[in-house]
Figure 1: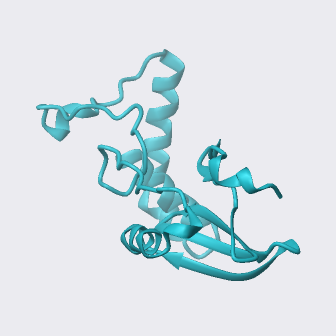
Figure 2: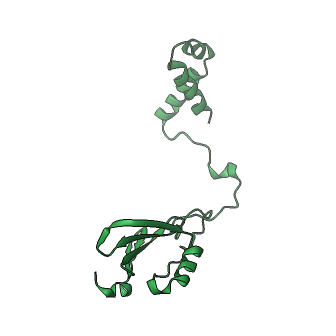
Figure 3: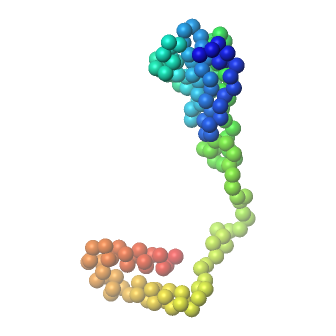
Amino acid sequence: MGSNMAEEQPMELSPITVYAGREYGGLIYYPFDKDDGVGIDIASLSDPENILNSASYTYEDYARYRLDNPEIKLPEIDPPERGKGNDNTIGTVAGQSEPSDKPAEESNPPIEVETELEGEWSTQADAFLNNNTIVEIGSYVPFVGSVIEGGRTASAI
């Protein structure tokens, strides 16, 4: 590991950013983005793959840690921008539609029969599913009653 590691640029591996390790005092500090802040893994220069310690920081605490330890030359890591959704999405929200002035009843128009065969099947299924005698008898047979009730519910929508 050369001493020019502090000048290396971060590598973008969406959705995370990997920062080059920072050498200081016989240790290597590996900072990385986390969902809720910044993590730092610390390893020995003699065995850089063996993590000796891991720490997690909020973005504010990490910024304070950087200020308190300037000799480590840790990179600045800012919190990601939030999307325009309901603030649980990091980054840009793509494909979000604008709200409509229409009432909910007009948003999903009623389903209309498109073919004669579709109309016949729909009428026959409704007649079968709305026959209470069939439903009552079917309810004594495991699974059959559930299927019939599910069909009645679906046809009522």
